[in-house]
Image (cartoon, rainbow, N blue to C red):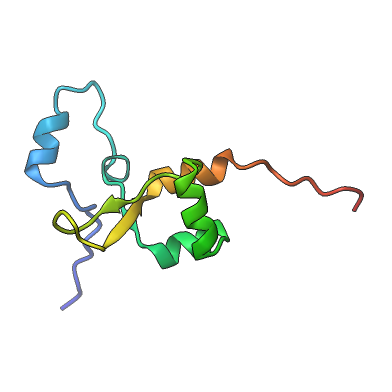
Length: 98
């Protein structure tokens, strides 16, 4: 018997659909969900080290992390959109004479 292909995209949970139904256009799930990046990933995608990350956070030049556990928890992460915003705000390096 041939397999049925499931070409349906996953739908967001009901409470998300209900909260955005009043909008003129239905937003894709990717714009609703903002994944959290943990420190090793942030360091890698930003190309900086731990000390530099903490220096930037202290001087309000990098977004503050989100606490992932109960208050006082050491588990933190950063919203993907905030990290991407920081990366996009960095000056672009232009190649001189190739």
